[in-house]
Length: 474
Image (cartoon, helix red, strand yellow):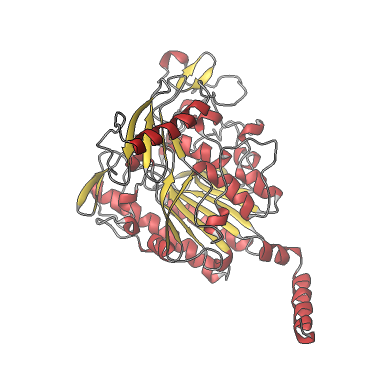
């Protein structure tokens, strides 16, 4: 190093010290913005081949970043959310079936259980400011108004979910009923929920731009009810309203990216875009001239293979399309590694960090397979909320093959996804050696799983008037 270079280094360090610890932190730790849409398959994202819509802001993330072809969500809402937050599969965290806590009561996402440690709590320990906006669904704010804070979020603006007995809470879009730490739950008259949430998150970003931020946006769009948006108030048919909601989601993504650019923090913010499961049945898109039906709640690729895009101009390689494997359990360890930390040794997770891949330091993840589980509705029993069976249906796949696992813990289907993406040909009884080897590989994974799925981890409490009773279990 020359004397001139040394002087430059000293000046740079001096400037950082003058700006204070927050300036130093922001140069060391990237921001993380995780956006997860609700009920939307690849067939409605134009960079994945959708022909019935244009999503230019999401497409720009893919063009300037990394687009995944093999990323698994869970088949339905709450299993996906619990997996994202905890880094564990539903068979371990108990969310093996959908369960809407505000609507049915009981089985809340209990922050007191170490097993329910969220990525937000870990990121706070690493010095991150944390904020969540959108749709939570796994706690009842009437009972725990500060549930988000207890799960590690400094700030939030969340639709409460459909609270049984509270008519106002039905509104998730127009005149939405939203909970914030300062004002509690209230109706935002004349507002559109995605605007309320996006505005709130943008305000948080502006306030905390000089420190590392971990931002969680489980967007309410494009889940039913299918409503007209402020941009397309005359949309009337179900399909037109669905398209309008998707376009509005893309607009919200664009607003967030614009904010990051205006604040000059775009190149140190890692944006991850995905969806929690496939499109609702009854909505059909077009890809490569062929109809693609929505299959939310099902374990076909249309139901669980989610769009997944990672972008950061300063950190993530551009124009990369990858077949590397990842699923939602990987997000927690990925966030922690990106933040410069390590997952506590005494915290059991299933995920594997994909940070080396998205930072361009590797070409594959460490995964040999990925899993999706979380089929159908749960039931209330005398011992708590659990799945309909002791061992829930699930699917496991690698880059080429996929197996379906029955409730009897038996492989019942084998598909070559590369040759048969619509899973029409069952190769289970094939005598080809390559198919036998695939079955052997997946059977070893199945054998490693417990015979009984976990129940949701929560402490029983006094019943509320709206709590589901065992006699009305679904």
